[in-house]
Every structure is written in structure tokens, then in C-alpha cells.
Length: 233
Ligand code: GLP
Image 1 (cartoon, rainbow, N blue to C red):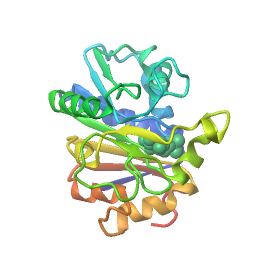
Image 2 (image 1 turned 30 degrees about the horizontal axis):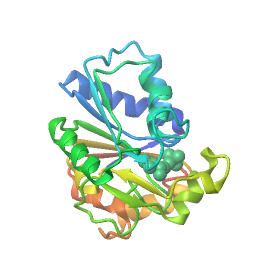
Image 3 (image 1 turned 90 degrees about the horizontal axis):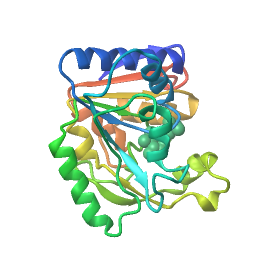
């Protein structure tokens, strides 16, 4: 793993955008995208740039079960507001959290990933080391599936909802195996509450208890972190 230390999230967003621009200059056509607060500075860089993304495809990591694009807390809505409404892409894929048959929707999403091989996968990380919504215990070679969210993730994400009871308890998430198919992976993390997860990801054993540790098995990973997130390395 290549580790890039930055002063803050703003500098991190700029670094990540440089990697995307380099990738695009070298033929990258598909971006794997993430939600959460972490990638917001990257999306700001993208939307304020003069780069055209209308030939690019995006494939997002995950979506809450039960929320559709018109729900303000859905990840589809987040992506539209943060990026796609300002910078149109050729095609944008986010799992459908309202599909009647979620298992079929997961299979369909795996087909989408296979048809649009991800050149650069953007990732954040959960405080418990989750990537996408792959919580501790998730198989390291998994594909897209319906997952149960842990209490700690529900608590960490409740800030986006009126009350904790409104936070969905399930999500559709690309699996760790699908994430590892990305040709290049860029993981960003800022703040002290990510320090344990970063330590486990970089220095710990590769174990399902620390989903992000699976990235040690990938040969093209860049980790962009601030001093607080790096403080336990
Ligand atoms: C959610 C998302 C993850 C994200 C994580 C961290 O659980 N499913 O993709 O990495 O939150 O979020 P934040 O960047 O807000 O700390």
C-alpha cells in the first residue's frame, strides 16, 4: 500500500482528484464511487474543475435497503447532489435499495460491475474497518449482497437522519471481492476516529474481523490519510 499523508481533507480531496485525472489521461473510463463525509472534498474538486466526465461511467458501492432516489438520505440522492447533478456522467449506477427482489437486484448489480470493470475505486472506511457496507465477518471474496448493519455503523451514520430509528438496518453492498476487482483503489480517511481502522488495515493481519485488511491482498492501493487517522501507525 502506498500511504500519502495530508494536512486535512481538503488536501486529501486534491490528491485523490490528481489520481483520478492521471487515470483518465491514461484511459480510465469507470470510477467506483463512495458516499459518506470523507469523499465530499474530492467531489468538490471534481465539480469545481473544468474536467468533462460525460464519457465516464460510475458504479457506486452501496445503498440503504428501503430508500429510493427521492429519499434525501439515500446514497443515490447524495451522489446526485454532490456530483452528478453538477457533472453529468455517461451512466451512473447505484444499487437499488427498493428493488422488490433484492437478491435478483444484487445479481444484476454484479453483472453491471462485470460489464463496467472499475478502473479507479474510491473508498472511505468505517470506524470498525468496514468498506462499502461490508461489516466485520463479511467474506473477503464476497460479491454484491444484502447486509445487516452493525449497531456501531447505525450509530455512526445516525447523524444524517432525524432519529436513530430512521436509520435503515440493512443495505445492499458490493462485496469485498467485487471491490478488489478495481484496477486501482484509493482509500481516504480523516480524523482520530478512523485511527484504529487504519492501523488494522495497514499493519494488522488479513482477517474478516477487519474488512479493509483485505486491501493488503491488492497490489495497487493508495491510502490518503491525515495525521489523526495515521496516529496509530
Ligand atoms: C458508510 C459508507 C462507507 C463509508 C463509511 C464512512 O458506512 N457505506 O462507504 O466509507 O460510511 O463514512 P464517513 O466518510 O462519513 O466517515
